[in-house]
Length: 317
Image (cartoon, rainbow, N blue to C red; front, top):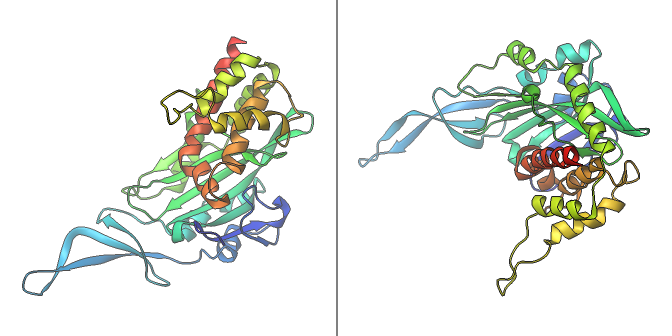
């Protein structure tokens, strides 16, 4: 297993995930069973911290705790005494009612960054087609970081099946596609479910945006502008600006060759998916760093920017 992914499991019915990581497990697992097979059945503990004073005496550090994994004493982070850890088992219980009612299926789960970031991904039993055969499925991603300064994050994550790209849900008017909970609060699953809604209306809104992008065509000029804005140009050694960055040039190549390029060729849907394809499959050192960035880092924000910009170009078309 490569560096950032500590443990991971994925359900057989979903096929090998887009990032190609993890071990295959049986289908139709309960959240508790997924917790076990993904190697996440451990707890964290907040322990007192001590320093040695000038006389060699151990003195407790006030208002600070050290967060450890109880199973192997792995140190995660220094936290405040008002920081409330969420145990992995509690995070996975969030899915119990949904899975029990048949509304969702556990898809993948694992730990990144030496166990300090735990996640679970469930497939929502709802999907749509942009073009015939071009299916977008809906997923719910629960991220439980054992790190100071990181919030619990529950969000909807559409995935385009043909290329396994994780798409952006950052649409105007759908800000409730994600809920963040600060660790200074006690996690309230019912409150998060109420805020999130997990409603079909949200996926319907995304469907409208995707189909709108699929109905508008780019030109030779504005597609270059679009990729240059996603992958900004740099200066060469002599201080002269390059016409296109390497990633922008690569995007032009992937525009016609990426998986699913035959769906909506020449449209802004195809252009947007070129960016998501690159963030998930080509940019970065390896698969696990791409996955981390696509979900939590720079590339997550890039996808949001790519969607917003593609819609703006499509509206002007």
